[in-house]
Length: 390
Image (cartoon, rainbow, N blue to C red):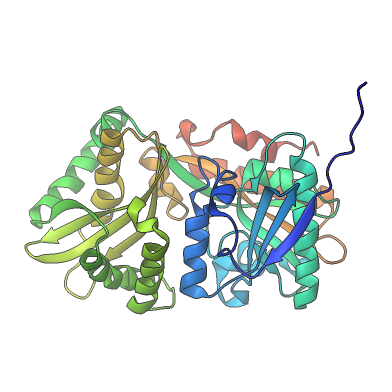
């Protein structure tokens, strides 16, 4: 006789940090593009910056979902504050928010099972995160820099949650012939410009080398990365970079890291640090010694040319180049993918569904304008954000 069994209840827990959570069970929830959601990466941020609560959802002792949290940076940091990423809607979002996802990550994906249990698990995780925000005296939760499809799924798990487009990620499909093949596909004008950049770089005498992040390499690149951060308005010096990289060493992350170094004689003048994840390569850090010399296309050589050749040789299929300088990246062949914030105040909603649609259509239109004639930059994943339908 067939007996209908009631679905096992989903239980949620709040852990003080990622340390006590089974890393293998966690990483089974990590997708192909979710490197910054991996247990090793989240654990490294906790070692470097202090532990942050992690919400988990389980049933019958099986981990079904994980939701890291962190406090955000407040109004002083445009990248990690609600007024900074959504200035037109921030006032309605209340004051202090509990941020969901990996600390200071500019690409988040949901760590959650697929299939019929996904919606209930997301609902449970989001509900427990709201309770945690209330306990902390926050005004709500926000999960920013979230993959567009995942943002729509998470927002659908709560009637007052709103998914609001606010940024775009970039990636390059890796051609088998590496950077040379990508350049060959470009227009004559673009190819001429690339050759001019290469010649200017070569006149400096800089040599590109690929290296793993051994302790001596880490010590040399940390100062360069700190200089670049300072130049672009970020706080923290070389010690903060060293702390982050040493925390990554402690969790084994540096085993997946590769550095592209620019050397002038014995002097290291520039570096790009990337991470390997499955068949993806992620660009994470760029550094330059602005105290000794002026840049001459090192960013281009170390962040595009060398990694693309490395990715092609290693059989990687996608090279993720992150946010910022979108127009430059699009001109070099990058694809844009939507990044959205799911905003859920403790009470009420950040905006009406109609205002949400209006915001997303307008924002998607701005990204399409940025892409311009580079039609390959905007894929079918943008359709959900450009539609007037709910």
